[in-house]
Image 1 (cartoon, rainbow, N blue to C red):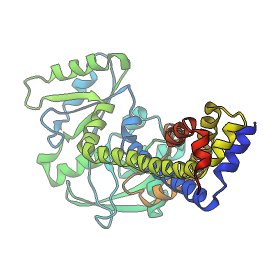
Image 2 (image 1 turned 180 degrees about the vertical axis):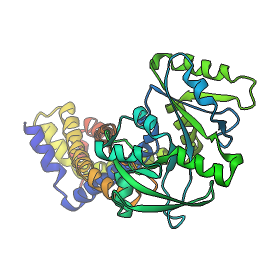
Image 3 (image 1 turned 180 degrees about the horizontal axis):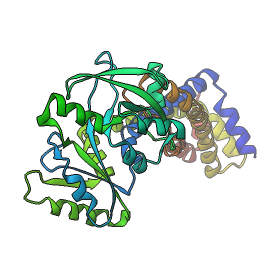
Length: 385
């Protein structure tokens, strides 16, 4: 108990220096937490993927389509429970800066495959009834001030023209990592319009969402699907939804690696700052440590005292930084919602931040503790200043 009391008193003896050290650790932990959360946000689509969903696309590239005729053949594959044709629409609302994901899907199958999209029963029924109706995430609706019943127009980029639709339903995510910034509308509306305007593009699907009855057989079912279309005009590549999402994330591997490196460099920099603070404190108290040794304090006890002082500073700073991570992440997430729709601080990030604070405290105290343990009483008391 005496050592703990001494550690706290020593830690805050030089108030300005201690305060700046704590602030530095807090800022470093805060930066580390935000950077880690950015990486988690990048992988949010991967983490939200379900093991009972596959994605079938053209084997050449996602930019090449598949015939609508594949739908019934996919349903006939053993283990497949549902098939949902889908197209990335790429529509623009008013201006290009108002980017958000928008897709054309078969609505019944979409809602069956994604039970994490929570929709009120009345709104769900209205969305399924209206061929020109759309389903919008609550975050997206909040962003533009939309409400159920509003009429909106998307300007097509991949599919030219002005596409009018009515917001019939809003969905909330059942999980924290569910993307609530998307818009879905009826695939039939897209296809029927194309039959009138561009018949050559009708009856084509960007990809199929495939529901399966046994996630453990995902690889086998994927092989069966691809084997069925082997040597056809449009061969397929079928993979788990997680692998499909990872293919997009992997395009940003360099950026993600850079963010990871920066986050750890921040911790190393504050480690150097904390180590310098502890070294200064140890040099200033050389005579005190010598006096404690004359009173019977062992080298181990002095080492524990120095480690305790270092940990008090680092843990206090880490605690302050961790307390600021969640509100800072909410503010940052709100500002970056157009690019990072899911921005939630994970428990893993908080634990890593806490562990970093402890690590900094222990590492910063190693050299001063070693110096104190090797201190010779006569030489220390002989020094002046």
